[in-house]
Image (cartoon, rainbow, N blue to C red; front, side):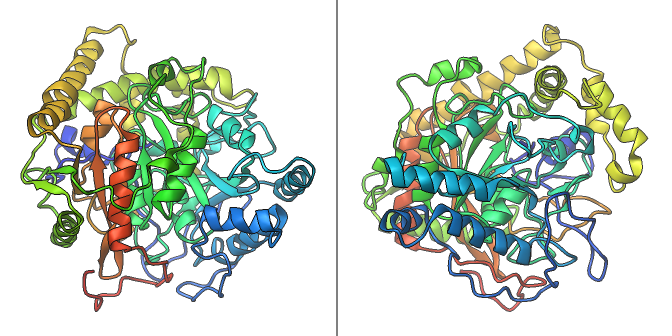
Length: 561
């Protein structure tokens, strides 16, 4: 779910700030030019040549709506969709030049597709996701023949006792879970020098827009896979930036819901205060559709009780192309701009487009106390990671050689060649040194996060300016993968919504040198419907997304657009 850190510049090598920014952000991609990438994880295959243009693909950029219409009309079947996407994965995911986005394909995918086709013929579809292939991040438990490892070899022997709530809801909606995606190992809460998208099990994930660039993370594989049309849509998870950053880096729409809208039961955790799963898609409409399937109360996740009366079974009803008319959009300029000239330029163009669509732009409308709770956030994550991971392993990882965070640390040390070849596990060491959640230091840090991010932060600025949303660049263009030094992260805007537990949506804002840049809409709690309306209107007014070209490196001749 990844700690991505996100207010302004990373600034130097200073302990807390750098740790906060890099501690789980997403990581880089793999090797420098001419060097072989780490081995692909189990279950993936293919022999893509580095920089080779992919074969024409009939389902490239296909939306859920279009696929559902084809299924309803009998032009396609769930099996034909699964076969087409699996062939695409075989072509482009493995080998030295592959994306390494899919950590494992579902060995029962075609049999499940046949069952869904038979059910459609006998009873009709369950809903718009019936027979639609979906990829989910490899920290979401499934009680099938796939593993759930968070990218770590330490969990390869584990067999989940049941589906995570998210996986269960997808199956009940008729979706076909096609496979698991690669990620920044342990959702990038392991080292301050990590490379986003690298895991001991899956190797280094690449960005399909430029193969030497980071896919960001920690939901790296979901971002790269959905961008590359390996599936119609995907599910990521976020603690701070791990949905919105890979969405922006891969020119996708990513929704980070209000904490509690989507159950976390059965998801490998970092922090019960900030963790959430959410949809990643190529369009706002598809993301909204998937969110409706994911959202809902779960007695096993107490946080979801707060969503009662706030969620929606169908978020597509909020898709309004005129949704920006009369909206008040605040610009968080002081600390969430300024670290990337291309990102700033594209954000300025986005503001003009929103104004032309009828929005009132309140500029600036800066969020108070940005950066004032960074150290407190990191402390909260350290405490909660230890407690929450120990609880997860005890219940959800029977058969694994590890039962606690302490065991994971020892496993990594004992398998350093596979697990620690590029960066260490100092964040895990620091988390292990923390005490219980009754410690005064933890309780004080959590109170500070809540107060400064909510009532004295997002709430204050939105009430003062009567805002519908706050916007800022999601982050800069994807950086070059560097396994030696780790991520070259400049800044981002994920932290305010992440710490508050409030929703945010990343949408494509354009391209710099052919590299995607995103724009984030931040809102009040349970305002997903408002953010979807605004994001959809912006998307329809600009229509910026372009499919990836799998270039070996960035196109430095391409003008920003």
